[in-house]
Length: 259
Image (cartoon, rainbow, N blue to C red; front, side, top):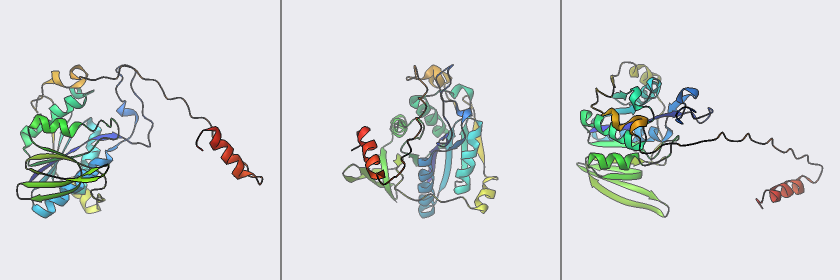
């Protein structure tokens, strides 16, 4: 089975994040980059499917040069190879442009199953899987917390507010997963060393057959038109317990309308 996992490098939530004033895009150079947390669950699920049914796991990412760090982590977890799409023309791509670019690359790699995290921790739009499935003309199974493969059939439990739905489709398909689906493995020392020798194909826009007019800021259908810095946080209030600490805390919470 040819499984492709779409991975995104996002700013570390522990790092300060800011937008660039010249084009209102995220300043990715100002923050440490890490692999999107939900994508680690997608990688783990791909590895579990490979271990049960055989095949190959390819990691696909679109991002700047430093996204290589996230690729190597995915390879160290156990993915077989990677494709890195990097080009200045891609900077500022929105979800529509990203889905188009990934579709073009998947036309080169082929796939039986594409797996994504349900959303990224930076943009949090959660629409890429649906857009990608539509562009590829294959079924989309979203928010999976359990996946079963039987021949050319795929079944998932789709998590909902009231429990879960059972959804079934045929392959090829696109699925998105939630954090309850598994527990991502830590890369072993052996895996880290092996990752250094695994193939990583680097593609530019022209190499992947991507029309530069449909990606980047110029091709985006959405844009950030304005932003403002968040106000500095107020200093915390220290409550000294002089036998009436509980009353002071209750009064404070009441003043904030928490009680």
